[in-house]
Image (cartoon, rainbow, N blue to C red; front, side, top):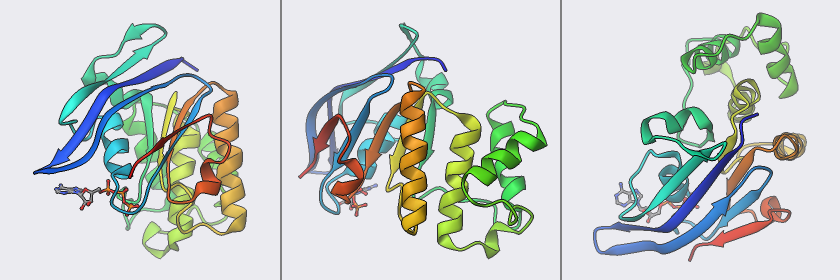
Amino acid sequence: MQKVVVELIRVSKKYGRRQLFADINQRIGPGECVGVTGPNGSGKSTLVKIIAGLLRPSAGIVQVRMDGKAVDAEKRMACFGLISPELLFYQAMTGYENLQFLVRARGLALSDEQLLTCLEAVGLSGRQQECVGTYSTGMRQRLKFAVLEALRPPVWLLDEPTSNLDEEGKKLVKRLVDNALAQQAAVVIATNDLEEVRDAGQKIALA
Ligand SMILES: Nc1ncnc2c1ncn2[C@@H]1O[C@H](COP(=O)(O)OP(=O)(O)OP(=O)(O)O)[C@@H](O)[C@H]1O
């Protein structure tokens, strides 16, 4: 896996006059996990979107370096794997088809067997030929992790990663994150659940 370092330098965000957060400095390197915590509305999802390049900060910058070289803003998305409540699947396509489509959209060619292994890893084998429109919310959340398993991005951006998951699903997410860290991915977890970021090496606490 390519080694990516994400660096937040004095990152701030305002909506109108409301300052959500200011001057966040944080380095997230390979094999490191940073937890983003704070109450509802404190800006956790906003910060994740800024790191992903989906929103601009009001001030400050997010630098991304791959194997020591700066990655241009337009090529950054290829470094990131994002889990977010706002991500939606194609309802009329099966779990398998959604996964295959998203993997191909990233320019990756995975065999049927490899895709099925990713679905199996998240407990969806046997349900892969059913339309996502018929999936439960927890099954859709598991499918998001199947996409990450397939893409194996060097940076994992996880916004509320265990929402809608049962106890077994929560353990699954912990296992997947631990594996990603062992493989030197950089991981950001934004959550209201402090238990979820108990083991995170560093924390950004928003207020
Ligand atoms: N486009 C926008 N324009 C104005 N305000 C916004 C916009 N997007 C988000 N906000 C506000 O920014 C604040 C932070 O939102 P955000 O979703 O980042 O919080 P959060 O910490 O992830 O919350 P939660 O724990 O509820 O998921 C909220 O008050 C929200 O209303």
